[in-house]
Length: 116
Image (cartoon, rainbow, N blue to C red):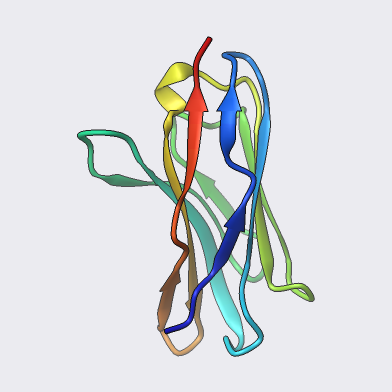
C-alpha cells in the first residue's frame, strides 16, 4: 500500500506557527490535486486546503488568511504553512493526494496541538 510521508506536527502556543510537509513516493504517477484535511477529537474529517496542478487553491473559511498551501511538483511534495494558530486548530492533520487516474492516497496523520 502506497504511503505518504508527513512531517512537521507538534505543540505550539496560540498565535504561533507550524509548517507541515507531505512527500509522495515515486511510485505515484502524475499528481492532480494535493490537499490537507484535519480531524479534531469528536469531530468528522474536514478539508483544510487544497491545491490543483495549475496552482488553484481553496481554503476552509476557518483558516483563510492564516494558512497557506503550496506544492513542489518536482519533489512531489505538498506543504501547509500555518500561522496565527488557534486552539481550535488542534487536530490530526492528514495529507491527501489524488492522481490523474482518480486514485487517492492518504498520509498516516500528524498531530497538531495548539495550547499554552
